[in-house]
Image (cartoon, rainbow over all chains, first blue to last red; front, side, top):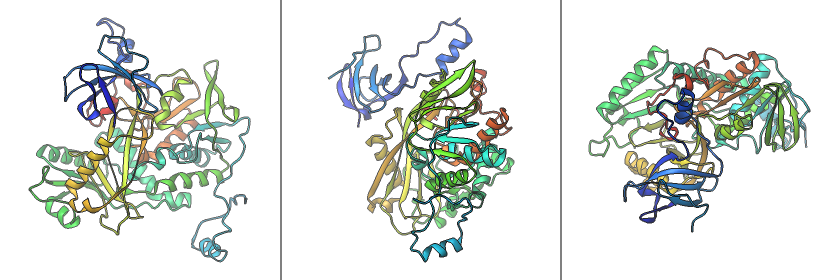
Amino acid sequence: MLLIPCPWCGARSQLEFTYGGDATVRRPAADAAEAEWFRYVYIRDNPMGPHDEWWLHSAGCRQWFRVRRDTRTHDILGSAAPHAPLPQAAS
Amino acid sequence: MRTTEASLKYSIFSLARNARSYHEGWPLAWRSPAPKPRYDAVIVGGGGHGLATAYYLAKEHGLANVAVLEKGWLGGGNTGRNTTIVRSNYHLDANAHFYEFSLKLWEKLAQDLNFNIMYSARGVLNLVHSPADLDAAMRRGNAMRLNGIDATFLTRDEIAKWIPNLDCSAETRFPILGGLLQPRGGTVRHDAVAWGYARAADTRGVDIIQQCAVTGIRIDDGAIAGVDTTQGFIATRKLGLAVAGHSGHVAAMAGLKLPIESHVLQAMVSEPVKPVLDTVVTSGAVHFYISQSDKGELVMGGDLDFYNSYAQRGNLPIIEHVVSACLALFPSFGRLKLMRTWGGVMDMTMDGSPIIGKLPVKGLYMTGGWCYGGFKATPASGWLLAHTIARDAPHALNAAFTLERFAEGRMIDEKGAGPYAWMH
């Protein structure tokens, strides 16, 4: 069971959360080239190791936030509000 | 240690002959050679897909100077972790033709490989629980029939008579209204597929090299020049990737980024019991599928864990979901103990369909992005990748499964789920 640290509610069971995918992709400008939009929609780094990702506390405070999690071990390295810096490691 | 005899044919006679020596005289099924400095083609990944590719390169295209590189042991990845189901009950034309080609290869594969892969055409039944399910099943069933694939609709009463331990009463949370059956669907012994292809490929001269991880891909003037491995550099002009959940970072060695995310999918088995279920039952409504192995275990699975993972293990919420779905459909299985659970790394593409073909580096090819469906695709995937490697051009059956389709807007989105890798 993942114990996910919501920045507002603290550590809660993964049952309360919904996954939102890679949090490193950035929406291009509306007039950006098609290739840039293609990369935004379809291409992911898919790292083997630390992965920054969106989670929604859907059965809690209903806030989106980011989690840094190791995809090899599922260890959670930290979490942060959408625009706050993500710590390298968390307690 | 005995060497293989290329001429040894498995049969009732060789079985009887070896019984007299207490089965201690069987030759090894394949060699374990040291890698040669150069091959005509190198396949990365010694699972079903990679071994099948090498086998068909040798058999169909006369290319015998081929190596299969496997970082662990044969069939130790998703080939040994799936739930052994084979079927071709797809709606979209590209998928239907591809998976039907695969099912036709499955039907003859034991004879072709001279290896008992235990193909069992016990049927795959998709349960229907709502009027929307019913419409979708009828539509898919009719599409399958138009593509020449067997599909039959069973009413609730027919299902209740056939599968007595399935709860077909009206009082359940998701009452069963009927089901779409593909009679030729069924199961295949998964490990035997890796072993059978390995033995048949080895007999035709393919070098299978285990404990050999690829650490780098060398490109010379825009074309493949070889691979760096834990057993040294191996030169080749044609490199095929069949590495499932690891497609992303192996392709990254060639400077490519793929529309793929790796996710964990779990499966589990109960303790073995006497025969209780003689078909494969699936339910989209409760995200569940189940069959009984020849050892008697009930083999079941459900959804992804829904987060990126290379861990080959998942978490308890999905196991609880699968077991509760099982008990909703088969209340009598509540007395069974769950014996074992495991996970595999799925290469989830952004449209739920695979990539089989050329990559944008000369001499580099891949079969991957198999999502949940890799096992049943094994023979066709290998056959078509071999064709693509040998001719440097795709076959009509894999022409649609390009990497470029994502940029060109030619998605093959069977579920219509949109560009979210974990939603397919």
